[in-house]
Picture 1: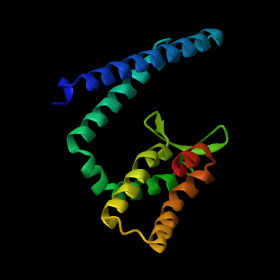
Picture 2: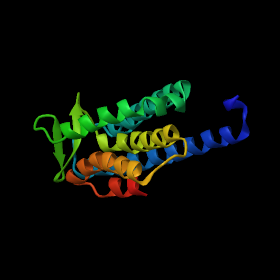
Picture 3: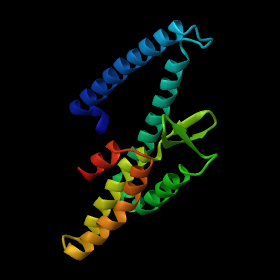
Length: 171
């Protein structure tokens, strides 16, 4: 069982400590900014937002753990297709939001997210699935076709502009 193994316990403890340290840093930074600028915002609002994000992340992590990585690989073409649509939506006025001169965000309900963050999950999963389907029979032309296909979401991310995410994906 996953929860009974000692390495899993140490992983959970390490992640919890790292998250706690991150929460402390977020609270420390945002509280100082709120006090400096005499903003009429609760000191605890950013902390509560981070806790909400953590709860959403834990829920999604648990769902993916229950579903299994095989399902993630099997459905990765569909997930990647949806993410490419989201990357295109970033450029549409009224849907995509410009922050500090870059159009990377989609906002709804007071919250926002970057579709390029989802590419970091689904593009490698799609590539892994392709390698598994090829069963070790990878030819240069098929590999170049795959790279051309994968360059489309990377190109959209470069247009936002964002150079760090494509560099990470190339690695």
